[in-house]
Length: 110
Length: 120
Image 1 (cartoon, rainbow over the protein chains, first blue to last red):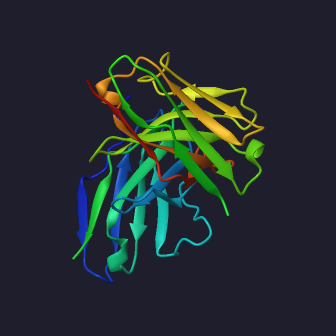
Image 2 (image 1 turned 135 degrees about the horizontal axis):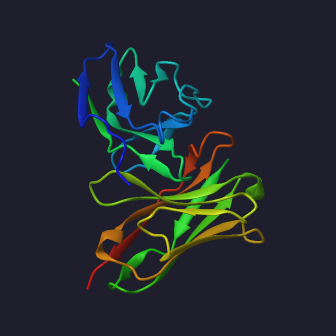
């Protein structure tokens, strides 16, 4: 099972906006509205930021938003804060009833 | 407050076995699917297995199917991952997570993980 494709790194300055892409196939991202996004700080457990493509769990800032077009999902972060610096992972349910993660994207807030 | 506490990790030789446990509290255990996700040192997240709330349905990644078994004990509110025929590539921190309902296995609560090292 190959992982979903994410850029290895993205960067932005405080206050700016960034977008992280997550590309899959018609067997996963393209088939279901079941894409999730996670934030992971070093040495910490992942935190769910987005589920069901664009839904935020309670307590997650509305600066985080998700979307999908075809086989590619995206996570956008507006008004970057220094504490947003972390690794971000996408995941998607697949047509084989498995779960795929992306390879992860390191966000640097300059 | 949801709490998930993993245990059972350690050093094991290739071909050996370990059983991981995940003690859950703060929610109605039987109402939620539970999942195991692993992360090799310095690497990304990899899904391992998921079990339905009832315990009747299980799912596995191809890399562990036939070697790992997920189960749950409702009397102890605990999820287990029995790992047999371990390989060096199974070395990772193993996290258990509570799945958010109707989210396509979005994991909304995570434990801190337990480290499994497979080495001779």
